[in-house]
Length: 310
Image 1 (cartoon, rainbow, N blue to C red):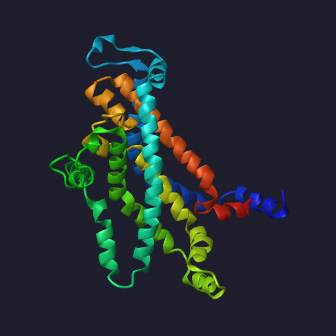
Image 2 (image 1 turned 45 degrees about the horizontal axis):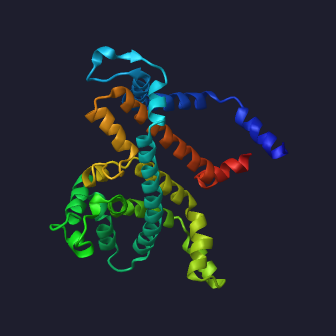
Image 3 (image 1 turned 180 degrees about the vertical axis):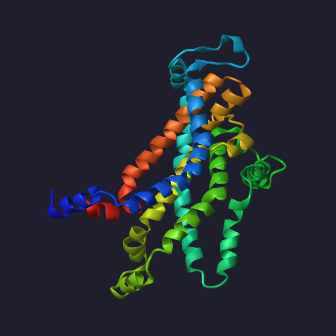
């Protein structure tokens, strides 16, 4: 351990003054109401879902309710419908987030660099994100319906794209990308604002071209914003639900894990299996967040200061 590290450690362990302790107590007291509300609206439903997942609980047969341990997890994890839905969800998430990252970066650069009509450009770009997802999904459904949809008539006059798995998945991804790319662009534009103009001018004076300035100067500075954008969009994309329900209702093996959980929990009234799927989705989302933080943690805000202390 270096001398600087020992000094830093001793400073961290130094007893707090009375004023600091009072300030810390005040901070806890101010945060307590919000923390209690969060526990009431998030922690309790999660804990209750975990408890239900350990039971055989079908509302069609309420008298047969009993504790069965991990049997529901074995049933779900050995079922091909679950793994098919899981694969579809991962595929939609991966393709969607990659496309959104590329398109979002392009839109962010346009909105950031627009000299004329900047406000109009930003407003027009963000319009899709302001439309309710279900409304947008019905628009896409009508557009791709044979004989009545303009896209179906123009691109597939002799077919029904929403009746085949490949084309259905492509339309679902298209609808998701159209709806949420503006949100990705908004997050990336916040990162672009962090790039110092002086740094770009210095790189330009040194002979760096546009691509070199983008990859060597802008992207490294934008890493925290890119991390946040990818994390938010990946977690959101993994829970894809509305577009699938409206466009295909999960037919042609296009169901996601969220749709499968909904069908078991709400339509099937099987609280045990439905809760088990909900808990598994929660675990998957937690794993995705953990992996993102571990892989890109060095780019997270404040990580430089932490390294410097160590």
